[in-house]
Structure formats: structure tokens, C-alpha cells
Picture 1 (cartoon, helix red, strand yellow):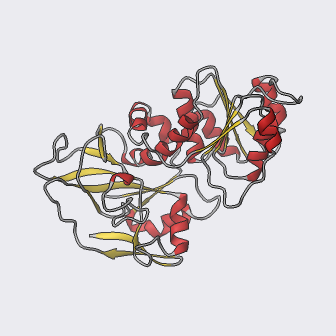
Picture 2: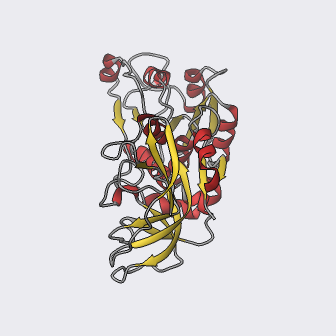
Picture 3: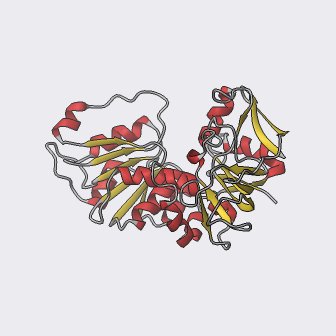
Length: 336
């Protein structure tokens, strides 16, 4: 079969690899769609992750169709459409330094257990939308880390795939008001489409002033604070942290799900005096199939997140597009 491999720093190739061997506890999935993540650009630039540098398989956002089922597997049948948990592979995280990747024609799901390392989805869900399951689990974990309640007023910074997924998650959890902040008008339009109550264009609006208008005046030791109770950084820019902490009222929560490439200085006196909670988020310890239920129920809403699709024969173009800043929001590779 053919698979996409990182073959050196800045270099990827589609190569022939051995067909997977299906053992009694395994399931073989024909990949039908696989999203490209921002982390893929990092792996490519590094030449792959140890211990597979120079020959690392790419792809960790898969959806596909079951084509072979080991004799000991239960609850999974040939023809089932499935989403897959990349961190549930015994041979290492799929497409993240493990032995296998999903930007390939087939993926072996070892020790396959439904609800643990794969889950069946209805056949009517488009595969390119199903491939969002993994990044949407990242977004859902970021949301869960901020412990939202219906009474909260939320500001999501960044209307890329994770920010949009977080917006959907907050509204699905019943949050009363969600405002999305970004610099790009088309992304803010998507935020409104997926359920945001309001948007702020940080390029031409005073974010702090608009948050006070939208969420009221906050309770704090110093004036000028917003009634926003939760801030989520899905942008990864120092200005987001600075704006959130400068605007945060007493007891506000700041969740960080975006990757910051450099340290960001913070005013600890402000954090102490206003008892602001800052919480990080990484991966999806329990959310990989929690988000599947909402994805199935509201797939048309999630479909808005996908901006570009490429066939597997165009995978190099897909990678270039996905890793070029500003060229795309969410790129998904589809397979015949």
C-alpha cells in the first residue's frame, strides 16, 4: 500500500510500504479521509519524531471504512464507518511518532475495542467531516478544562478549527453567551455560522471595550474589567494572554489550548489579586469519543470548519497548503 512518510527535514514522500497483517484482535480500516494538523508542519520540519526520524508516518486525524475484522473482535463489522483514537495504538501514537500513520491507504487498528480505540459512526456522515473527530476532541478537552456552566460568558480567541470547535462545544454545553475574537473576517463569519453569539474583529475593534459591552462590567480590584467569566486562547499569540488577563474580572478562568512557541510574561500580582485561574490543555484524555456524539448529531455545523479538500493523489499539494500560513483553515485529504 501507499503511505505518506517524512523522509527528512522538510521532506515528505508517498512510498510503498508493506500491507498490514491483520491478527485476531485487529481491524483493518481503509482510510477515506484524514485531516492535516498544524503539528504535521512541525514534524516535517524536524524530519520526523524519534524513534522514526527520517521515516515517520504522517496522519493522525483519520476516518474510514472497516474492510477486515480479526476473529476475536466484537462489535465491529466489515463495512462499518469508523473514527479512530490515535493515542490508543499499542505501537505508538498514530501519525505522531508511532509506527503507523493515517495519511495512507490503509490503517491497522491493533487490539481493536469499540469505544476505546475506534468507534462506529452512521454511514450518512461525510468522511471529511468525520475526520474532524480528533481535532474536535482537542477543542472539547480545552473547553472541559475551563469547567463551563450555562451561566458563564465566554470569549474564545482564535477562529481556526480549534476555536470553532470550542465555540460549538461551549454552546452544546449550554453556555449562555460565547464571543469569538479573531483578525480575519471570513473566520468570524464561520464563528457566527457555527453558533457564536457575537464576534469581535481585533484588527479594528477595541477588544476590552467590546467585551464589556457584550458581557457587562466585571467585579475586580481595578476598574475596566469585563464580566467575561471564561477566556479560551485558541490563537497562540502573546497579545491574547495579555488582553485576557488585563480584562479578566475576579475569579475568571483562562484556558490555553493553543501552542505558544515562546514564553509569555504575565502579571502575577493581577492573577493573585483577582484570583484568576490559568489552566492548560493538551490532547484529549477522555474526549476522543465524547465529541463523536455531538459530531454525529450536528455534522452540518462541523462541516463549516473544513475549508479545503484534496485527493490522496494531491497529498503534497494538501500538505503545502495546510502548512502555508493564511492559505487555509482546515485541510482534509480524501481517498477513493
